[in-house]
Length: 176
Image 1 (cartoon, one colour):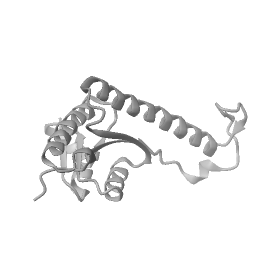
Image 2 (cartoon, one colour):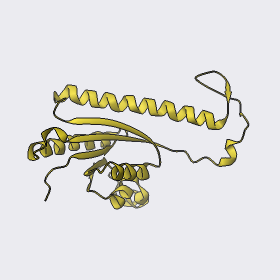
Image 3 (cartoon, one colour):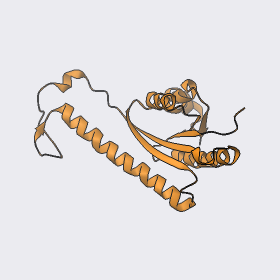
Image 4 (cartoon, one colour):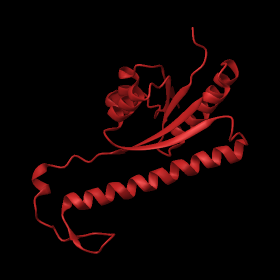
């Protein structure tokens, strides 16, 4: 039986719950580092998924809709505008994740001991988390959840955390 995890995935959305998940991931990674013979190979991957906005194809016609590029100032189509928005969101999310990683290393003074990297993806959150975990052969997913109770919990049956926990091929830890 394996008592350590080489790759831990933390879906991260800058919420308190995802901070809690990252905190748990660092503890588990440290325990894995101590118990494994591969001291330098433990990785935590922060994954931020930018939710793709479903847009009917009919809106992507050739018309410009009076949209203006924030980069060039030229009139652009809705498709081009959406592409610019996603690029800006991706750049912002990447900076946030890299700042979080740098802050962790500074606060914990463990830069060489735990390897962390940031990934930003665009799509449907649960699907992207599962897809990434499978492609990267993730050993464990640690993610925050809202901790709803009662009727609110019943309404949240389609939540990202639930979908990931049901469909993942690796252990999933849900953190409040």
